[in-house]
Image 1 (tube, rainbow, N blue to C red):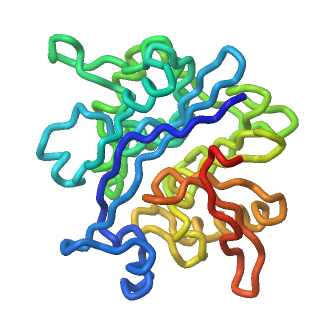
Image 2: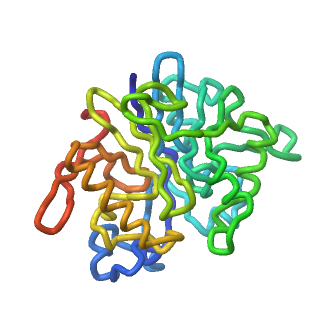
Length: 285
């Protein structure tokens, strides 16, 4: 097995929304805001080479949205999904499995592209199985008012129309694996959105966890640092606490999708709760 970082660019979100009830005097030290109170965040995905499978976990915002939409989120940087894949010698057609942690636009926007005539949409990964779960799919396709702006129909419906969509029906375990293979199992989380899936990858005798939006960055490790975007923030805190205790006990490697600087870290127990132990790049494992 090989793991590769796939950088698809950066975007900006309101700092207060990203840190919830934590005051700016604290979070601004972690990710300084610009004059509009916006902070830069990564759109970092993960590519897994496992025998004959090439599994991509999330795919960023994509590039099919209009300029008005993009101007809301200040997409910036030189990295793109295609550029990152090409650097490794791959193309979108090589992806066998497109795993979507959840269907917010910054995680799944690259799933779908315009067709050649620009009269409609088609899947970006023509040979891939797209993995979601039925509970989250229902939640995303009949969205609540709070999340409606994050679930874009053009990112979601063309996937089901393509007949490439499959359900992850069981989380699996480190012993049994999952639909993604014997070295990958899934843990579902419910605080950020319904049934968000976190892949746990057994790699070089370590467990690497793709954190998605349970922990967007290193700065979100303390329990009160919960996004205002979360639908059930108290549940997020409970999920974080349980997960972080296990991560410290078992020396998990946390892989961050949105941290603008840091790719990975480990955590440890301290008098103040679970905190960062070491920060490093995925390639250093």
